[in-house]
Image (tube, rainbow, N blue to C red; front, side, top):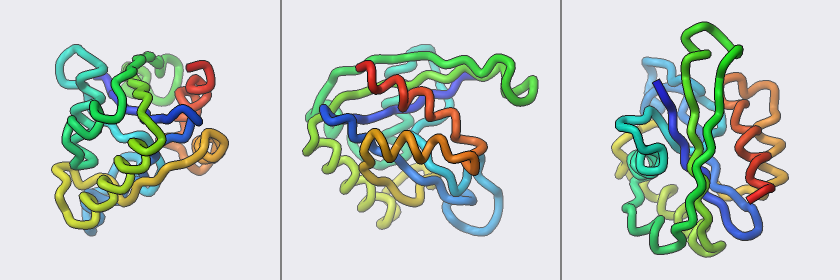
Length: 165
């Protein structure tokens, strides 16, 4: 099983980060993996193309049309991350792919604003996200190094890799 995420960033290395609901759709019931924690939007990879999978998951979770991404930029880099030797045996089998997509400063802010509107007005297929925001590289690094983020703390690695792009 593989997981894919879309890390949107601008030329100043600001990034779009989401906060997950604690439960599915923010309603009492089934606890959401990584609930209440920050993450990059993403999910399970269906098919074999990590870039297409990350884009699909982002669109499902944010309610943005694909044209909102491609209109602001189309520079994509995909990196893979291993979970080998970490967590349970089941968790160690999971491969992670992060598609880094560079967009304009304006584009990043527009995507955050439209996502916020979609979440608040229930236009989103997946009801996982509670809120999104644009954070500086330094803020993102600090968020993902927080030891309280047990399920999503691994995002510090792709955030650190952003410095090289």
